[in-house]
Amino acid sequence: MSITNRVLTAILSVTAGAAALAPTSASANHPCQSEWVKFKTFFDQNGATIARGICQLVNKSDAAAAKKCVDDFEAAKQKIDAKLAEYNAKADDTQWKIGPRGLGEATWASGTLLAERTFAGAPVLSDSWRLELQRTGGKATKPMRGTVCFLDGDGNLALPAATFAIDAGRPTYDNTFTGVAGLTPVILLEKPIGLNGHQYQLRGTRGSEPGVVREARQVDTNAKAAKIRGQ
Image (cartoon, rainbow, N blue to C red; front, side, top):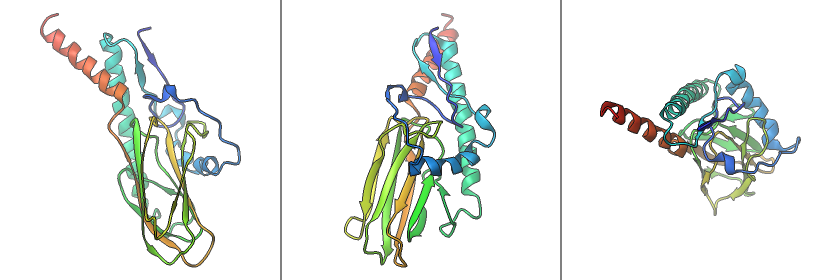
């Protein structure tokens, strides 16, 4: 077969460059994994039938397969963006909401951390994903500690978790993660329980569309041009 379609069981996920990863299973007690289950209910409410994965382009002369790759990506993107808009529009998704919160696309979420908070987003439609966090105020003296996880369709860690600390002297965190196509970002924020908190804002932003999709678009464009020329 000149092209291989990788179907992910995760809702609204794509593969692009993730094949080189060597996932390690998350422990059953890993906080990223336990919190992710709550978000999966929303993003995966219709099961794996909602979305299918994106191809891994092998033969760049296979125009039909390239077109299918692009079409599949566009369909998945439409569904993911619709779900993100629906989640962001929920009236109770505010800084006062108790429990985990959804993380939109390139949209700042703000709050005051008194103990712990979890954010999670939809599967990443790119090879890269940028997380920005800014401490904007507050009287807390103990650092705010963060953990960033990327989970696969089964809720397992697909990349080693990244950790960071924020306080008045280190008020920002800005990191771009790569090799994350089709993975779900989960961010855990925590500090010792107390009445004094850290005021903050954070946002996650995906990069450009996966390289495999850009390649497929070029193959499709070249095939259409050749057809017009009568080749």
